[in-house]
Length: 257
Image (cartoon, rainbow, N blue to C red; front, top):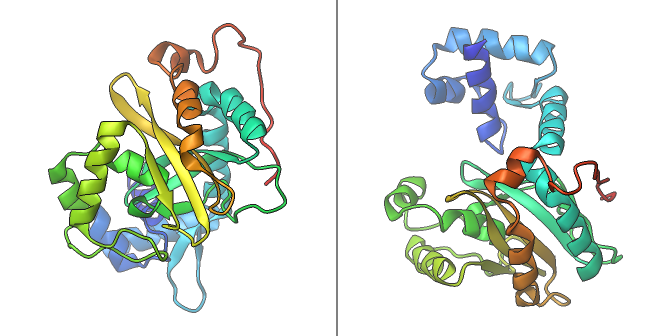
């Protein structure tokens, strides 16, 4: 079971389909063991195999478990009521993102009421260096950790305003640490802007919450104070309770994307 879970996690780390050799390299397991684990996971629906390339991606069962985990997450439960209220008041999308390797993955999202909206949904992955939430998470890392994560000076291009040099990214992260929030304008997709603040469990940053929308409509900084107020109750006592203590029966329904 430990080997199969290691293989599953290795597949999940890559946004692109991955092969047996790559999974073996990441896990340190023999290729024969990786192959057998992948076939078992495939039969159970946790991975899918591309018939042309024979490479693997996460399957529907893994996606369903991810959705259920996000829905039952104590952090998501604690923040969901405030996120939903902020989405309704701002008429923009409000998302909760967590780090996965070099990406931020949105595990909870309340959509804007505007007809003009982004294509971003729950489960969307963005490069950390090309999004407000991602940069917010990167800002909590040490310079040594950042250099290990990005060993090359040149960073992958994503949109017209993506930060493309590691040195520039490090300077931006220093400013984010100083002001306590991050913003992105046309960095993941042209025409999309956002602002994000960290979610802390004690002193540890466990996620980021963001407001995002079309650049033509969104003034990101308008929502910094609201995001900071939203994340303030997310202390260990609230999170341990799985929600807001004075209203334990509150449930929320995620808005249709």
